[in-house]
Every structure is written in structure tokens, then in C-alpha cells.
Image (tube, rainbow, N blue to C red; front, side, top):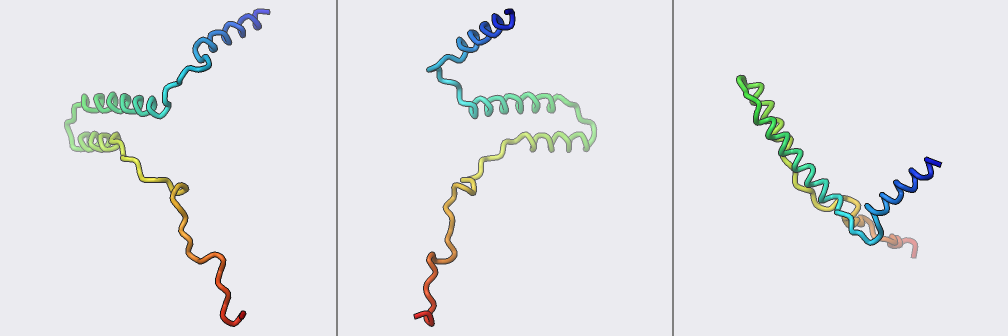
Length: 97
């Protein structure tokens, strides 16, 4: 019986949190904000490291370059129109009449 009561409770809580008609936040926007915040925290921690030799400075430079966000590329390949190399249907040869 306790299992049923517990299930009803969690279903009621889930219904209150995710009820019909509620607009959920955009997942891509939330992910982008989380990545930006995480990158900023990591870069601050890397900048706090005191470097005394060239390998440490080089490592910091590599991490700083890795944390830079790359711009998005154009359209993916499957969205681009296909180019037709041969005419369809193929023309009849002259000897075929």
C-alpha cells in the first residue's frame, strides 16, 4: 500500500511541476548558458595558476585556445541541395533512332 501512496505523491508532484500548457525553456539556450558559465569558471581557475616556466605558460595558452568557442559552420550536408551530374533521363544515343 505504501508503494501506491508514494507513487501517487510523486505523480502529483510531477504534474504540478510539468503541467500541461506550460512552456518549457529552450534546451539549446540553457545548454549554451551552462557551457558559457562553465568555460568562464574553468578559465578563471586556469588564470589563477602561477607559472614559473615556459611549459606551464604553454599549457595555459593551449587551454585558453581550447576554451574558445568555434563559430558554427554553415548548413549541414543533408540540408544542402544535391547537384545532378548527369541528366535524368539519359538522352538516347544517335544510333538508337
